[in-house]
Each structure stands twice: as C-alpha cells, then as structure tokens.
Image (cartoon, rainbow, N blue to C red; front, side):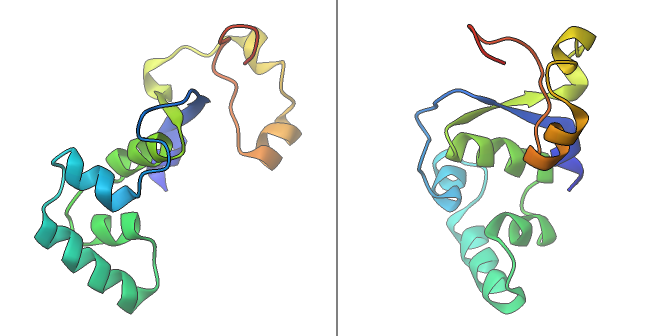
Length: 113
C-alpha cells in the first residue's frame, strides 16, 4: 500500500479508538450509506478488507483509509512526507527491529519514541 509508506503511526489514544471503519467513514461524512453497502457487497465477493473495497470502488483514497485505520486503533497518523526524520531518533531503533515490527521512529513523545 502506497499510503503505508507515507503515513507513520504514533501511539496516542483518540476518541475513535475501537470504532468500526465503516462507522468512522459514515460519521465523518467521507462516504454515504450507499457507498458502504456497495463496498460491503464487493468485500464479500473479493474477500478483501473494507478499506480495500472502498478504494477499489473509487469511494475513497487509500491515504484517507490509512489515517482512519490509525484512528480506529487509537493511534495518531503521522505524514512522513511532512516531517524531517532526525538521524539521532532513527538510530535508536535498529533497521532489523524496524522491519520486524513495521515501525519508523519519527520523534520523541514525552519520554518515549
């Protein structure tokens, strides 16, 4: 997914944590009930995730799904293209650990990364 390369995630609880992605999209007005219904039908046919179905049907952009998925998980999305990553922060997590865990250290948050 292109969006995963451009959006990082920082741990920070959000009010949307635990909400279903379809509910989040409806509540924020990003999709209509009809689009959700079509995507749910498509999802059953292709066996894909709802976000992928919505992107495939042209209802929403992949980068928006990435941000909403981070909100759903109670995390904060970080747009990597808009940040300068400090070599000092990057050096705190080895490349092997970063690949294994799927993380990119983007900065300090309180006493943690």
